[in-house]
Amino acid sequence: MLKSMSASRKTLALVWFVGAGVSFLALYLITTFGESEHVTSLWDWYLPAVTPNLSLIVGVMFNDIKYKSARSDQVDSFYYRVALWLSVVYLLVLLATPLLSPFTEAAMDDDLKNSRFALSFLQALATTALGAFYVRQKDKS
Amino acid sequence: MASTRFDAHRRWVGIVPGVLLAVLLAWLPLAESATTAPAVGTAKNAIGTLLVTHSDGIEERLRGQGALMLYEGDVLSTSADSRALIELRDGTQVGFDFATRARLLTRWEKDKGDTRILRLEIGTLWIKTGSNARPLEVETPVASAAPIIESGGKIEFMIATLDDGNSMLSVIDGVVPFGTAFGTCPIKPSTVSYAVQGKKCTKAEALDTKRATAWTAKLAKGKEPMAAAPLPTFWPPPDTSTHQVIPRELLVDGSARPTTLAALAAKMEKALNRTGYSSPGYYAVPGGFAMLTQLERIHPDATPFPPDQRWKIKVDPASLSSFNLSAYLKALLGKDAGVFRVIAFVFTAEPIVSDNVKPVIDEAKNWVEQGGKALPGSYAAQPFSADMVCTALIYEFEIPTHGAPGRQRKPSEHNGQEHLRAARILQALGG
Image 1 (tube, helix red, strand yellow):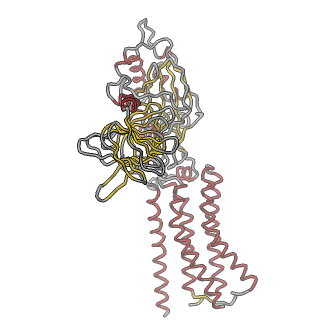
Image 2 (spheres, chains in turn purple, green; image 1 turned 45 degrees about the horizontal axis):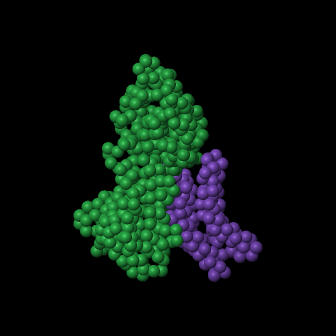
Image 3 (tube, rainbow over the protein chains, first blue to last red; image 1 turned 90 degrees about the vertical axis):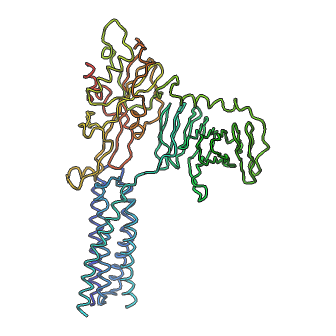
C-alpha cells in the first residue's frame, strides 16, 4: 500500500515537534520552578536526544519547499508506520524519564544517566528508520 | 494481499506497546545500585585522623578508636600529623605512619585464590600478620614485598617509599621476598634493603628493629581494651552548624556537694530519654567527655519528626501505591529535602575550636554506635568543676532531594537555643 510522501513527512514532523515540544515544556517547568541543581544535567541530557532528528526533519522539509521534490511521490506505508511508531515510542520514553524519576530511589541526575542506554538504543532505531525512509524516497526520485 | 498487510499492521500494533513496556521495565531497576561487597578489614585506631575514601568517592574519617569498615578499592590516608592502625579480615595488622597513602586491592588467581594487595603510594606501612594470615603483597611504585606466609608463622615488616622515589623494606620477623623488575631478594629478619629504580634490591643491612618500630607501639596500645583512654575521642570536633552553651544552673542541683560527671551524664541521659532519644554515644574530649545523640530527622522549624519517621535517615521517593500529587511535584522539582540533626553535648573546660573538617552524614549516622555505651568509671567520680562548661554542638545535615547525597547545613537556619528548645531538651532539663 502506498502513501503520499508529503503527507507522511508532515505527520512525522508533527509527531516529532509535538513530542519534543511536550518534553521541552516539561523540562522548562522543572528547571524554572525546581531546584537549580538539575538544570545543566537536564538540558545536557535532553538536547542531544532530540536535536539530530529534529534537524533531519527540518532539513528535509526545507529541501521539499525549495525543490518541490516530494509533492507527488508515494512511499510504502510499511516504512512510514515503522518510522512513526519508533518515533512515538522514543518520544514517550523521553518524556517519561524525568516524569517517572520521583518514583525511583535514585536522584534525577542518576535516572537521566541510567536512561541513556535505553534512549540511545531507541534513538538509533528511530533515526535509522527516518533516515532510511528519506533515502529510499531520494533513490526513487 | 490486503489481509496479509492487515495482519502485519495488527502485529505492529501488538509489538510496539510491548517494546515500550520492556524498555520501561528494563530501565526502572537501574535506579539504584547497592554496594554489597564484603568488608576486607576494619580501621581500629587513629592518632589524629585516618581518611578513608571509598571507591564510590564517599569519604569517612576515623578519629581515635573505632571500627570503620574497609572495602575493596578504598584509599586510606593519614596526614602529616596522624597515624593509624587497621586490621585486615585475616587478623593482619597494618600501621600507617605519618603522611601515608595506600589503596586496598585484591588479586584472584586460580591456584592461589585471593591475594590481598596494599598499594603504597607514599609513606610508611608497618605490617604484622596473624596466625591465620592469607597471602599478602605490598606494592610500591618501584618494588613489591610478598611475605612467605607459613601456617602459624608470624611475619612483621615495614615498607616505605623514599623521597627519591626508591623504596625501603625493613624486616623485623620472618622472611620477606623483596622484588623489583630486575629480580627478587629474600630479606631476612632484623635487616633492611632498598629497592632502587632500574636496579635489583640492595644487599641487606643490619637493622635496629626496636627503634624502627617504636612508632607502632602507641598504635597497638590504643587497641588494648584496658588502655588509658577507653572512649574514642571526639576532638577537635568537626565543624558545627551552630552551638549553644547550656546554663550551668540547669545541670547542677544547687546542693553544696559537687556534681560528679557521672551524675551529670545521668541527668543528661534522663533528659534525652524524656525527649525521645535513645542512649547517647560517649566520647572522650580533653578534660571531659562528650555525649552524642542519634542522627534524627527534623522539620524546617527544628522540631523532630514523629517517632516512626524520626530515625529514618533518607528521603523517600514519591509513592505509586499511595499517590499524592503534592509529594510527587515536590520530588519532581527537587523540593523534597530532608533535614537531619545530631547534637553533641561537650563537657570540658577546654575552649572548643573545631578542626574545619566538614562532617559527613554517613559518618554522623554511626557516631552513637561508635561511641562508648556508658561513661567509664575513670570519668564517673570526677567533679563537674567550676571552669567546666557544657556546650551543645549542633550538626545539621540536608539531603536536598531523594537519592541525592547528604551535606552539612552551615550555618543553620536556627540558633543553638532554638534547636535545643525545638528538641525539648532545655525544657527537660528544667529550662
